[in-house]
Length: 322
Image (tube, rainbow, N blue to C red; front, side, top):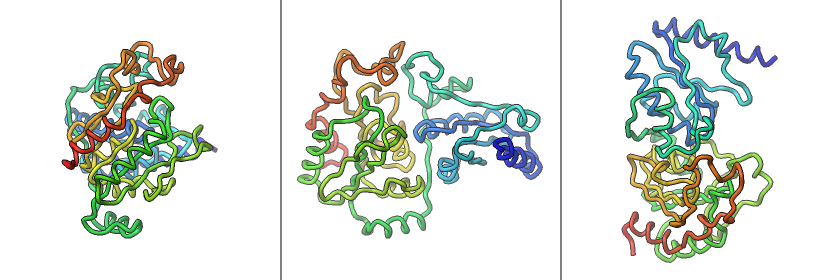
């Protein structure tokens, strides 16, 4: 039965070759949100390297729906959940198939490179710094604003606290104090993305803050992008939402511990990274990687010792408020 679900991809390849009258290259990255966004520079580099080919970005269906609004991408194919591309069967229709991996997936340790550069190098493509952009149509932005009660021109700050890997999470008491101080200094709406990002976190309670609007947990990615595009700032943990905010031009403030913000933050959108300068910080970039695969011998000090003062100083510098 699973094989039958793979037939539509072969049919898609056959007809897209006939329609475009071009040979095909496939770039495949199924998950997660930040990884897929960081693969967009590889897609553009493949278009430049193979100008006579059609490059197809194959990814999970929810991500494919989002990538349709990236003008750099000429063709995107959504893969149903739980399935994969039949590479062997599609070989006669595809000239080249690229499937870039993160450094930890390559079991090479955490490279000291921006994630987008890791993917470019894994594909054998020239390294470049380039910020992907996703353009959400005005009609969708306006519909999302009405859905959540946003007023035209209303200043909005978005928060993203997780849940995700414990080594990426800021303590709950730190978030509560950040919210309290932002309310004192910022006249506007606060919204909170609090949906778990990992299956094994679904049973854990989400954080809630008084007088902060919680976004729905099942919000589709296009709507998330539309919301972020109307925010003055996203403050969040190391996650795909930081990358997504960068694609819609929203400034980002990321809190980091195991990962160096230099290698994750958007490269072409105003962004700052806050971290505790400890001898064990940025262990993701060591070989072997020493965080969620093996636990933390230091009780995740790198996140627990990030001060609220650090975060607020960065917030004030981005928003230019005192």
